[in-house]
Image (cartoon, rainbow, N blue to C red; front, side):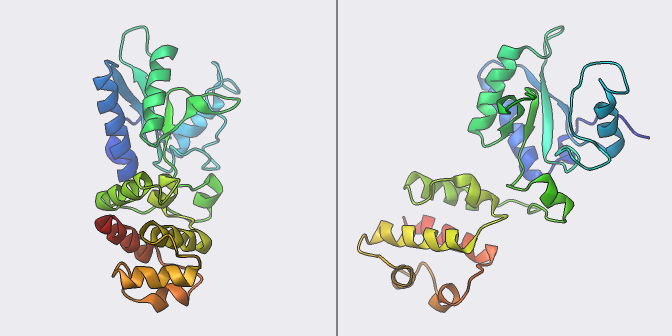
Length: 236
């Protein structure tokens, strides 16, 4: 039975690790002495924490059972922080400031949850629920920095409204991709009305090479969506 605390950022998904490092960097700029207290948790570790306040002494610290893989820590998508000041590790004002910084970076902060607030906790789920993960769905193993910058460029031009949806790209419904194509086409030509017209507009502008790929499918491969967004960003 392993209940040891793990703090190694390398045990996190690469994207989550990069966000954790960015959070530490931005907190340091604001004069906050924030450190990582925990990253990946084994099932035994999560069950050990779940027992606290129930079958073990102490206050309740989690509502997620390890045996049911209910914590994002177990999926390497979450980490906890603390204020590295002796006797003041969980200063609420400090954690609130770190939480605000984390949310600006795109992290989900436990301090913003309704009901049970977990102020040291941050996670990045790629839009996947625990049920999704249990069913076998997984986030991409690598992330593309150039692609993320392209998404941000389209957001700045108001072509897309929610960057996280396009950065995560786990559950994109075809209608969202069609809406994206229309928005891109309208950015260049406000006279575009229909989806077919939008595809033709982007073909004319050499943003897409094979119009039939976009016209004859109800399910767009993620690689095609990423290529479209990158090419658009270069054309803006």
